Image (cartoon, rainbow, N blue to C red; front, side, top):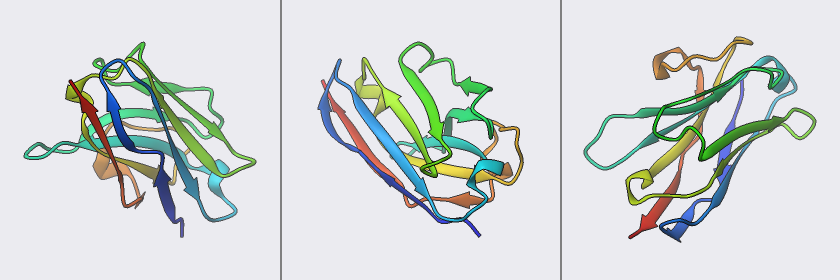
Length: 124
């Protein structure tokens, strides 16, 4: 069982930055691939970024590539999402997810555990 708690969301002007954190419970965090997803009002949940258990493999959706960076610290049981050059279209609830595999995926259906989400609002 893994419990995930996100933090770091907030209101930021366009062009600004935020760093989201996702703290995980459990001793086997390092064996989980991790992902970040987001959901805007009236839209479906969207893949944002994912990272393998070791951090050696990362994936991004095209719209955030070059602006967002996913990373993890297995000693701290935490995964991060550094978001730079934020745009109003990045506004959404951001959730982290854990997959009981070492390799991540972009499909939300293949993740086993989810956090409650944190709101990110980018003003124009």
